[in-house]
Length: 378
Ligand SMILES: *Cc1c(COP(=O)(O)O)cnc(C)c1O
Image (tube, rainbow, N blue to C red; front, side):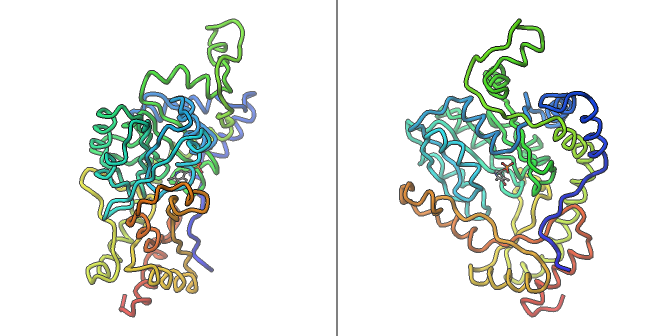
């Protein structure tokens, strides 16, 4: 049997919540489970206002609509990220200025951002890669100095903090993902957190296809009408039921994932000490939320060789992002700047199997295979 890279896990109550939603008479969006999820996230993570969406991609689209992003507006974001961080802005005709990663972590090089800001820059997107926080004090200082909206991509970073405050609560917006590959999963799903009060009223309208339906159901208006642009961002309450079931067990899920991460780290540390591999160091201001375990190899050739070795030995290990500035779609649009760290992380990073039910014995087995590749006794 090959050890898979990822395996979704139901924590216990999800099926019951699906059944309850199904019999409640309200299975469309913004039902009882949706409201429970919003309240839970707002309370637990200090988010001002939450809106469940059908994906993190959708959360970004909703944010781009809310800030009225116009063609030619510029958006700065790391090149080393998923396409969903970029697509929603491209859809609105914006110009993307990709930034490099820092030297020691795949996260955006915060000190390189200022040089990319022009008078057209309106948005700064940061991705907390592998759940490790970007330096949000520096990011918010740039935001204040240049009047930029900050959107945190928290797809990897649920339950992680920067200086003890939850990620997703710093930027004007936080975009969450509950895709199958994330710590908390509904298959497909996402959420937009809004931390700037000026956007809340309009968000409710944009979320509900540009109508004032929510105000109508609260009895604030006597007809519901088309009042603004919008889209259909709401997931059904069945999905929200799954999310609520997952969130009821978040403590258990996170504890287990961090245990798996720590075991990988402890077992592989001797190889890092010998200089054969490099393991990420988590800055003091950040926490580890057990989203993923990766190691870095000395070059692409060695990374691919180890990846092939593991895959031939029943361990599904995978690389990660291809830098977006080099992508087939974007190449011709890029301004030609070299982004060497993004390329290096793309070439040398290898992710190991990581999921809730991965037995610690399997972590040891996987590590023993990494040792075997280097011909070192485990
Ligand atoms: C998964 C992911 C997304 C997209 O999430 P969806 O919910 O699939 O739209 C965006 N950004 C990053 C960094 C991701 O890992």
